[in-house]
Structure formats: C-alpha cells, structure tokens
Image (tube, rainbow, N blue to C red; front, side, top):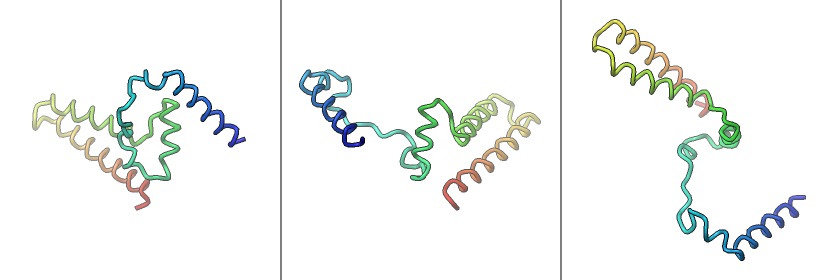
Length: 109
C-alpha cells in the first residue's frame, strides 16, 4: 500500500514538473520557512499539535499565552497603582505560573 502511495506521489510530482506547474508556484526557488515554534515544541508532541492545528484547535498553552498577551495589553491601559491594575497584575502572575508549570510538565521536568 505504502509503495503504491509513494509511487503515486512521485508520479504526481513528475507530471507537475513536466507541465511546469511547479515552476509557476509562488514560492518556487525560495527556502521553505520552518513553522514558528516547531523546534521549541517537544518532539513527542509535534505530531499531535500539528493535527490539532490542522483541525483548527489551539493547544491550551497557546490559549494561555494569548490570554496573557491580552491581559498585558489591558494592564497597559490602566492607571499604574490603581486597584484594578494591582488585581490584574496578580491575575497575570497566577497565569504565568500556571503556564510555566504546564510547559514544565510537557517537557517532562
């Protein structure tokens, strides 16, 4: 089965080369860009995360990072020293700790 699949892929590539379709591609001759964060992701999680990404599902760690970014933006709009700013700083610290613990767990630390 795999041999047949590989042969079909090779034949498709060959036909694309012969027809000039590959040379017309917008990224022809340019180096491939590695996905951001790929190397930083633990090797045993890469395939699972790739599947999640392709399905449109965001890993919880990424959601936490986005929430932190939003909270920091919100903090920048608040008056320094206000009770709202202090409360938000505490929430940011809690979320940073939770994220760090989650990342350590993923790394197997």
